[in-house]
Length: 374
Image (cartoon, rainbow, N blue to C red; front, side, top):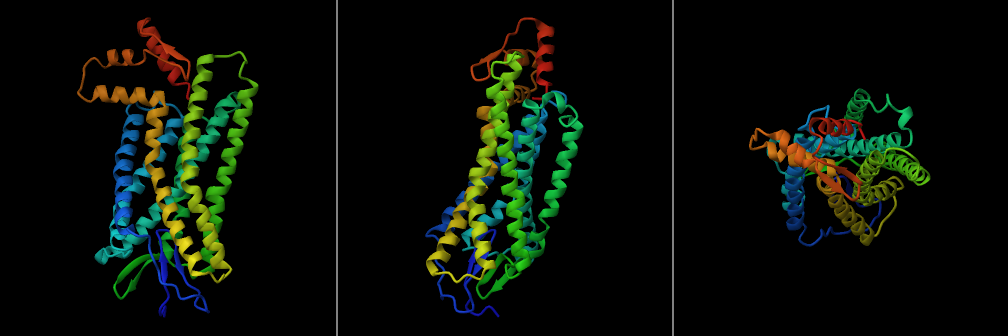
């Protein structure tokens, strides 16, 4: 019997007051949360759905031979975000109903499945971003020693393995997430009464956020030191410029992920530790925790719709392919001419400059450069 226990419910955690003498707090949600939360989730849904679908279409439009190795991770990231945003309408409807989860006979299935997808998205995102950082490290610092590791076959196997690991790590959400019935409705909650589950959650924060971020920092620290040391070394200036530009794009994607998910992981870790220690909290502290998780959860969800903007504004290669896809949509017969005109550009940030002279030979040279898998 829960009696008068108050639930501080949010999309990843539910909180209970201390039944052994804790304060009897009345729950106060953020004013207007049943209005602005659905709007935020619908905004993330529409922008994330069309943005990630656009990314997948553009990257896959040229086929495997014309793509870069990093594009494999880009496609998998976009796919994970695309699947995730499909669950947001459910949470938007729940938010508009003061967090009650009323979807008829399918309520429990939708509760478990949507929570599972959120967990898998969270794990797969950080794993793919970590691999992108390692790929940049190998491409810039260990280029001559990493031909096998940076082969298309090896990267596809890596992505498949990361999907399997993410799907397995998300299983606790299927087991411990369920619909709890109340007198005036029902809510989709996690069973936080299990110390094993709480310890598992805390371990997941370390394994799927703290350690990957440390690996990313080490990779980029080594890359920056290498570039500073060999900035005037002899070599291919154009290839070096492309490596630096690709590095900047991946770094922005990773920074966006860390900024989005760091507040949530901090609040989540604090909450789990307090629950494991059975700490008696004041009403103000409970309210601070719940509101902090609510806001940080919204910020984390925004990460699923920012990557397409990063690709479009920072990745010249992506913009050129997007332009090609746009020109091919009406079914223009002279696509090659459009391609030749699109590669005639000068970019100050990457020091790349290609002309249209040279005909077939220059086109082959450009395509060969694109296949250097930077």
